[in-house]
Amino acid sequence: MLVADDRPVFRAAARMLIAATPGFEQVGEASSGIEALALASDLQADVVLLDVRMPGMDGVETARRLALHAPDSMVVLVSMDSARELEPLVVASGAATCIPKQELSPRVLRSVWDARDHGLPA
Image (cartoon, rainbow, N blue to C red):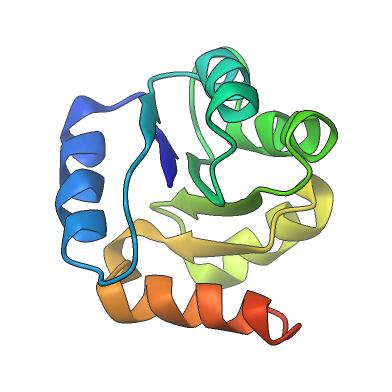
């Protein structure tokens, strides 16, 4: 899993969350959309956990570009916004889903991955 967020405190929390989720491993970390694009191609991450609101290239634009540069990576947008507010971003970005940061948990990560494995919407 590749984590991209401009806030170091969230990246640290994501590291702990990923470590606590059986079957998941963090392979990289980015502090910007541009850095995430560069790493995604090199790392071939199965999942990219991508903050919606980053300075410069935001998460929506980064997700769009990841679809071209790392098409095998499942992009999961994360944000402090509510799930209802996030739904249009999923459509606009081509991401698999968008999850409010406060709802992230090992169970949620596992369910998003399992939905992909079964061809279900995340």
